[in-house]
Image: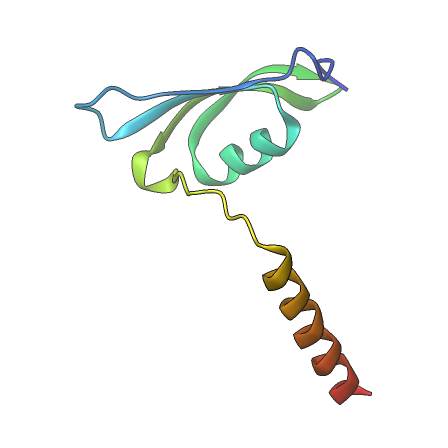
Amino acid sequence: MGYSRDEQETVLVRTADSEYYEVYSTIPSDIRWFLEHGDVEVVEKKNDRPIAIRGKVHKKQISFRKLKTLSEEHKEKLRQNIKIARSKLS
């Protein structure tokens, strides 16, 4: 383990005229994603595992979405649909 949970962070910075986000991360799941999808380099390792990365990703690889909130009625309807689908599989 690299950083404690309190110390882990991911920082994205982009200016209005840039096509890329500058990225720095010490969160393991984010590090894995950025290593696969971004132009990043490992800046710190521990036991041959990356614990900090820095680099850039294209702005189209990052999206911000409205958080969905489901009403209790909608949740119940989804539960019923799942129940029906599972009963058809049996």
